[in-house]
Length: 160
Image (cartoon, rainbow, N blue to C red; front, top):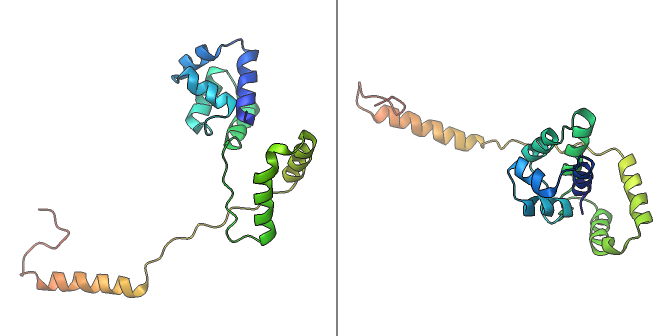
């Protein structure tokens, strides 16, 4: 079960809603909603989380918490350690290999440690820049095409 699924199940039970009733109200199948609750499906879309909040009358901090739990509830997460230290790669591999056997107290301790450490900012997004030589060739080709057109003929961007 994922954190989102556990919280959804609790909220649904607190409001006395059956799985079928909530699924009908959301326009999803009961099987899909059950799979979300049990962690057999990937995390829900933001639109579905917003619809769940609306159906269950969840507002402000509780809604933000449900969105946060949905973001952290992918049952089959992939950790990309490319570019990280060898120790980071070892940690990711050992965790993947042994997480099923870790006692709850150990998991709780690891969660406390990770939650108390500020997250690193995401890396800056780099824009692909066309090399100057390619840009010059494109401009030269456009100029050559325009020069080859007969006088008075519409340019390549003119409407027919």
